[in-house]
Image (cartoon, rainbow, N blue to C red; front, top):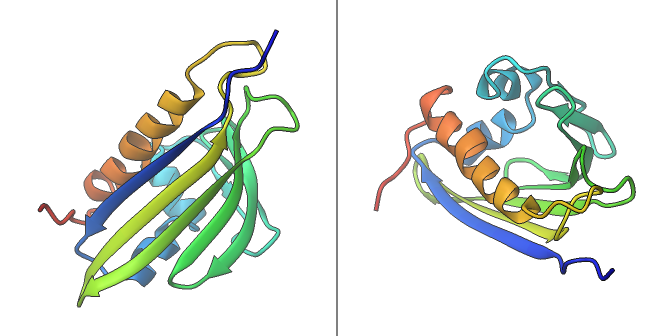
Length: 147
């Protein structure tokens, strides 16, 4: 059986807060727990530091941390094969005073999980939009810029 090809997710969002606020929120165990509506979160916000989100449903390692402009992580769902990681790169670009554009790119998302189930791409895409960006606005109170 041939494994399904990997895919990439690219998302851009704008928020009416400074880059440092968004950068810190994505590395704060407290903010990530609030965004996950109480699901257990662990975050070692150092280069090489491990993290676990959604009670272990997502885990990985911080590879590059350049405050307040860039986060790069090795990232995976628990259902992916043990040696399979995608790369998440998040850039925070200040477009105007207190307006930040987030550019997120997740590469090498596997075509299927370790059980042969498809849908990893869709799960990542919907997860970033619903579990991160929507909740940054609704739970943390960081307003999106509409345009």
